[in-house]
Image: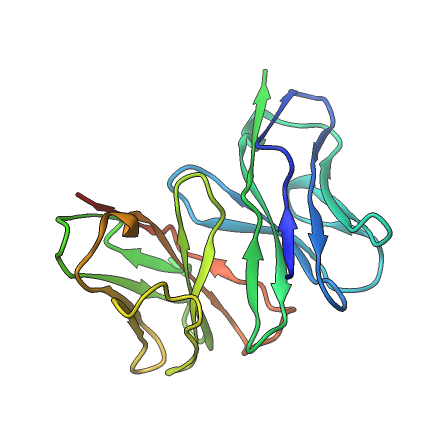
Length: 114
Length: 116
């Protein structure tokens, strides 16, 4: 079965420190991977995606993600976290069955403290 | 605004009632998706429309769930005889093209359904 896993329910980091949110995937064929962020009472916002090409993908709000095929991982990173980065982060994989759909991980709550 | 809108934002229903949830996608977007997000979980795919055609309804949990997009723009998700397990946030997303993984999905704010 194709899936993504987010092993951490919550990540706590101090403002200014590096932030990493982990994601691993299991797919047959080429993986198409995404990161979304969800703020309270708001819809999911797209951060970045990996389709092909460079393993380091740069996205919105200073976030980047590193695709690692050998470790089947797609970790989200930010060099210096802000309090405003506190939110729920979802990793997702595009499932290429039928017409295609996104399958999301369970989410990781990020808490950035001043 | 130019984003995806959903209404109502909150809905409380008594068990057994029928509900209808509306999604207004971004104008011109061909693809429309519905997701169900239970508390503490990631969104789960329900159904997919390409224009007015419902091409994938494999995620609908039961025959009480019905979705339509008759004119290829606004979509309605209807739940008949609601049950407590239907309580969740229902998210709608649209994307510009059809069935292409490269196209970003734009999400609405969701409708939080609570069934008492």
